[in-house]
Amino acid sequence: MEYTVGQVVYSKCGHDKGKAFIVTEIEEDFLYLTDGKSRKMDKPKKKKTKHVQITNYYDDELKTKIENGEYLLDADFVKALKKYSDQKQSKAN
Image (cartoon, rainbow, N blue to C red):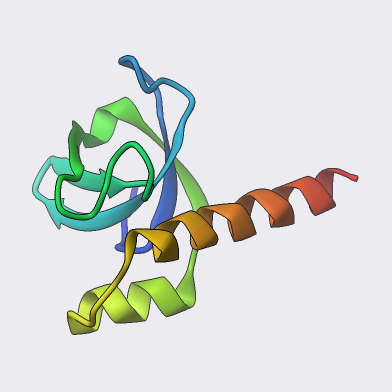
């Protein structure tokens, strides 16, 4: 499985099981995850790749900003996850 920054993943275990996060950094077998609410940018969740469920969705704008080291707010992650949730919900209907 290929992970990329800006990609939405779901936690498969732990107290945050089932929660959506965005990958902010990739380090060997670990991902750093942020959701902008419980896990802020300044203290991302470090999780093993085997403990997350990958999705095929990533936010282009967020991915570009992360890769270029541009300034990001926690609100940017909240907005991206909301956009993903809305898009997923509209496909279900």
